[in-house]
Length: 307
Image 1 (cartoon, rainbow, N blue to C red):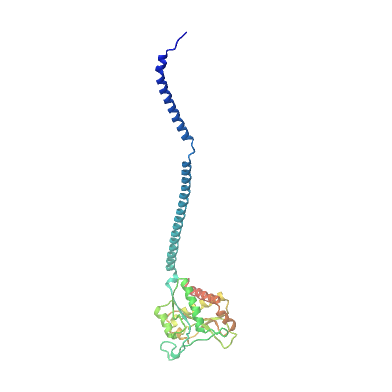
Image 2: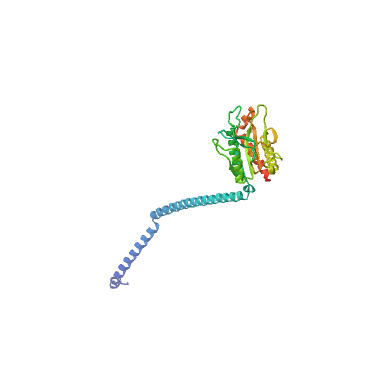
């Protein structure tokens, strides 16, 4: 029978205890690490939520910034485009042939009656009233001088739109400007056309229609421009009638109009209708009908200049 060596066993006990102690520590360390990896990362989850919200917020901010930037860029582009259009308009306005032409508009008559007299032409012994107030509407009661001014202002606007240079002899009714003075305004400005706006009247209330007036070929004061004045008168009369469907009368050639006789530039008196005719008086008071008249006059002026 074999016997154990107790001395050897006693000698190994300390080594066994040290080994056991180290093994326990190692196991504990291993459990701790395993626990750390298996634990749910609550903080990390919160961090992920926060980061996710940050992404949304950043995305929203970026989209807002981009949107606003786009709006600003579009607005700038829009403004630039508008500026380019306006510049183009100005360039085109300068390039229009009408821009080289000056039209003087004379709204006939005035509210102030001037019973003084003046020569009907240069060096003439025949005298005529400096200015009267004209006729008035048989139904509307509108004074001719008021109607003439309304139509003239519309004509000015239409001609400016087409590129013409425009001057007016008057812009209000309470003025005192004679026929000679009005003609001299056109002469001094060297107008390319002198358009005198009037309305007609007759003792016969059935008479209606449009006419224009110029001098005769034998006018003793300015026969040298008579052919141009007749041409201007015809163009305007035809164009007005075409747009308004008014009755066409004729171009009246006469040498008794001081406002024509004193003119050195192509001139015509435009009689837009009879205020003594009930139907025509009412039409003449309508803004829409007046627009047709002024477009017709403007078309006639275009035709006269060959535009």
